[in-house]
Amino acid sequence: MVNKHSITAKAHPNIAFIKYWGNQDNSLRLPSNGSISMNLANLNTVTTAAISQGSDHDSLELNGIQQSGPVLVRVQQYMDQFRNIFIKHEHLDIKSTNDFPISAGIASSASAFAALSTAAANIYDLDLTQNEISALARLGSGSACRSIPTGFTEWKTGNTHEDSYAVSIAPENHWNLWDCIAVIQSSPKDVSSTQGHNLANSSPLQYARIKDAARRLDICRNAILNKDFETLAEIIELDSNMMHAVMMTSKPTILYWQPTSIAIMQEVRQMRKNGIAAAYTLDAGSNVHVICNGNDIQKIEDLLVGIAGVNKIIKSPVGSGASVVSLT
Ligand code: PMV
Image 1 (cartoon, protein in one colour):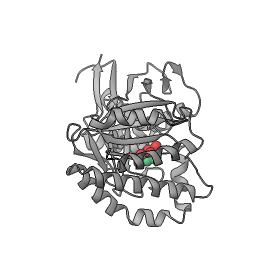
Image 2 (tube, protein in one colour):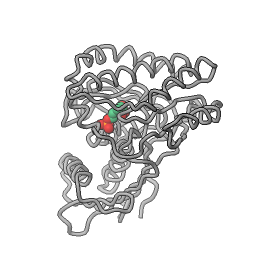
Image 3 (cartoon, rainbow, N blue to C red):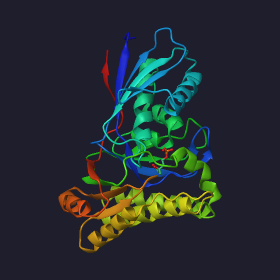
């Protein structure tokens, strides 16, 4: 056993092509349906965990600021759940940085819990498989399990903590797809995804969305494996629209779209008519992720920056899974 003082792990957020929305089990975050996503190489969360010397609680520094509110409580509850599984007692000092806006429809909680579970598994000297770390990441934020394996990943629902994790369906160099994110809002969103999952079943449309999920997953997985952009574009736009239809019809209603989001969706449809390989998808926020072929990225960026209300563009190709970057 190597005596480690701290472990630094890195993870990327991911963008879902087939979305996770709603749980069969809220405390274990066992999802109502499977999901597929791609990791985003240019966006990074880097997290260092060290065993706390004599402290009876975990501490968290996020982007240089010591946390004390709900963000800290969420991480502490996660670490308690983590430690209970492995009967560990030492608390952690955690330092994490993100190089992209948090809580704005760019899945910062996914990369946060993917990096934290990877760092924690290593600082506690647990000899875990990638599937086991993915399942642990899921307990912090469902979509985080998809940031553990590399490239394009699929999370199968599973029925227990142990069998609900994500696997890679294609490596990052499989297809030169990019996510061109049109950032409208960089501030935290009004309704968190954790709150949103709890509301999903209150929509009369959720049942139909879940019932049709296996079909959409098959189409999406095959489109990725066959590098069939036209089919991918249709299925990811349908899936995003279906999730937002559930959000809009839940009680209370959640409406993430802004006028600028709709203007971008219309522009993306026009781009496709003009022969540009682009498709839109939105997570729990107003920002629009434009999934596109790497060859078209400049054209797409030029068109997006011309839309009123677009503040910034963040571009990323497909990324790797979570990894340990240093050990001291
Ligand atoms: O992992 P959570 O609880 O932040 O939920 C993610 C929900 C969506 O981003 C809207 C969809 C998804 O599959 O990533």
